[in-house]
Image 1 (cartoon, rainbow, N blue to C red):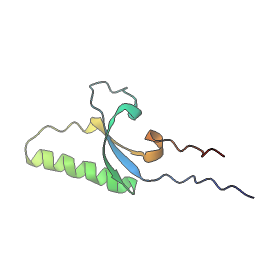
Image 2: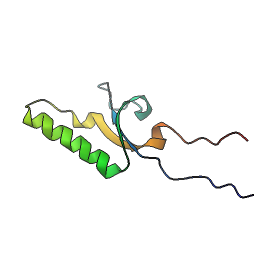
Image 3: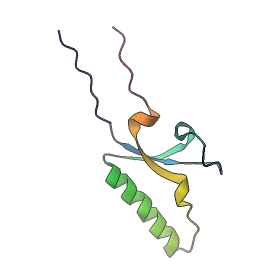
Image 4: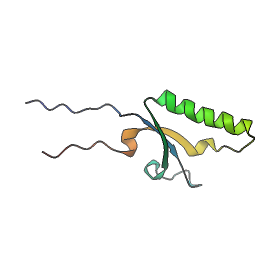
Amino acid sequence: MVEIVSLAACGWLMMYNPTDTLKYPITEWHQLWASDTAVECENYITERWKRAEEQKRYFEHERYSCVPADVVYPHTQPEK
């Protein structure tokens, strides 16, 4: 029997750094949103930025990041 392991990332997460520390580990950031693609996730951040500018609110772009879901939630092998 051949075992096939999936290597595909299962989506992208928009993460928010709740601290002022830029070196805070991404796994400790807060998940705000999930999407199917990196482009969709980045576009969502851009839209939030535009809305903040329109409403004359400060937007800390460096606190947001899109990462593959398996970076935050690593794939584990099922037990046999």
